Image 1 (cartoon, rainbow, N blue to C red):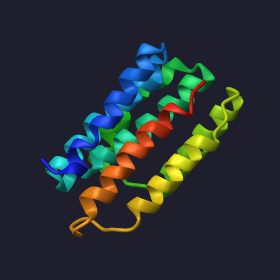
Image 2 (image 1 turned 60 degrees about the vertical axis):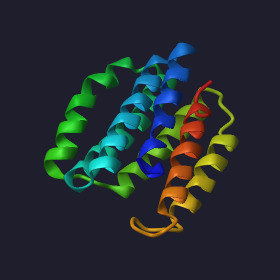
Image 3 (image 1 turned 120 degrees about the horizontal axis):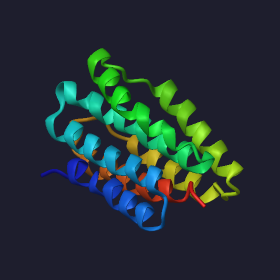
Image 4 (image 1 turned 45 degrees about the vertical axis):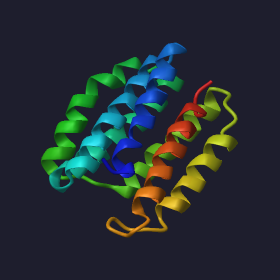
Length: 156
């Protein structure tokens, strides 16, 4: 199994860490991202949309955890179904959700600099290669690991 697939386990590990600290919503969101991204990276094709759904869920989980909005989880099955059915991949939506995740972290009195640095470095590495490039596994795998750690630092 290639590193761009198995490194999605970092999200599941981050989700477990969050759940063990009582951050159940965010932990569940990250575990779902880990699974969805794993499937997307492993199977490809239409399954890439499952990876996108996982990103939407994980970011909404951070927002919900920081703002104590547990009911957001009720929308998660619909997010997965709609993303898969309508093949919805949206960089702008992901950016907006990330911005709201940062704002929710600030609202929860979290210093977001470390998380921003991890996401920033991860994004720079991720953008260095395209799927199929020789170094894709290394760079995209680093993105998974760095952002998994970054997610943890978006919570108090």
